[in-house]
Length: 204
Picture (cartoon, rainbow, N blue to C red):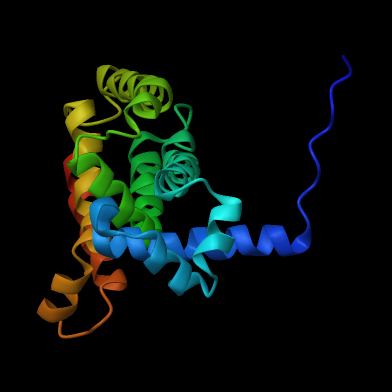
């Protein structure tokens, strides 16, 4: 039986899917999966609920679609860590990329954090299949740098955990930071502080 080629989405369909996913990102990152409703997503997108359900089967499908897209984006800075580069500069570049991502994509960071805090019910398979092999590869590269004396002795896994914690903090705790810094921009101070801290930690 001949296979049929999937129909290309029209411009309106593409636009509406984008509207729904962007609205859902707002709602999920603010209210969490449990607190989010299809009505709230539809209202934020400026569409009717029946119209929303034309594109997605329900809340779970929208949530999983967002997380799947986010996983690819989230892994990119770690993929770019080059084992052939200068160890300290490569890791500092990774810190900067993660900080930039937190500043540019705060909703995405909060969405991902919320999923992990709940035990990753939707994303655990992707963590195992996508993140774990990449994480192991980069930890091994960091250990080689340490063994060669090109990097101060640190625990590679906990170094990466620390980088994630100190950079994603600026997205996940954005409201608290705005109060404590009295509304001033965190980016320049954060970038200077993190570079100084990690350079001192990593330089052999």
